[in-house]
Image: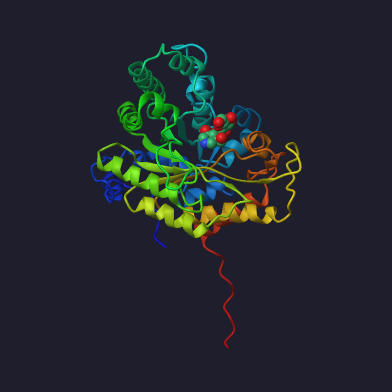
Length: 391
Ligand code: 9MR
């Protein structure tokens, strides 16, 4: 297996690492910074982040304010990179009135990360969902023109990235633009595509790069590592990102959300092959929102109704982790919330839940131990046995 690149590489080494792809893109120096190395090393030894650090794979979680306020020990102790579940979305930071900001949740996240020596993934700048009402209503009423919409996005990006400049490792610049059809492509009905035109996507990456030149910029989506069965969405995203990079758009990586469901098929080999495919053109990859949902008795206890799903879930988490470990260009592995207690799943998928690696009472599940074991073996190798007797 190819060895992972080390976070402490000198500038020349880091530059060489990214030179394989679109050489035109100057790589942000994050992977080269002492801060990244420190964050990866500061660890509770026997934790996800502890073992991850030993192979230079930051392990992350999305965090809600509740995760930070009530369960800081796990939120801080198990993870070395954090994402705001909602804290940095436009609707959260500029909620009710244009120009009136509320940075409470985003500041809390960044301060928590700093206190716990964690890196931060910024999420997300350009998405059809969780936009402020004043923005969507203004566009619908015609009081915000297409030109003004471009200016407002530019202002949003420069304001938010400016506030946290140098503190965000990776930004999910654009989120969920591709259709789930076969073939897939940029969704012509997406709110941004309809109201601002498709070119806004590339422009958002350019503004983000200008606003914080050291941040790694990601295109983030679900079903982009073969989970759709056909690989159609992977193929479409791959082709688009390659084309954009060839045109000089500063896209440094692809985020694969990796929201799995035990009722659907999952092909671990395809998942890994698709990671390798992105890597083959010099892209970094982040697993950004991993979880594995299943059918449950009720939304409160989230007891799986099919006992086999208790085996399927850790298997799928583990398969994703093993693929991530095997592909050195995967630079972080993040779960979308670590406890079933505040997972997004029961509120979105009727009858489903149990998606996280800790249960509703913050107790680790088999999925947690499977991930820990994968990382431990990757970090330490399997223990040696006593020498065998002669045959
Ligand atoms: O976890 C987020 C949840 O609290 C919000 O209600 C939801 C709104 O759509 O967004 C969730 O996070 C999403 C993420 O931003 C993008 N990918 C899908 C995630 C789950 O919906």
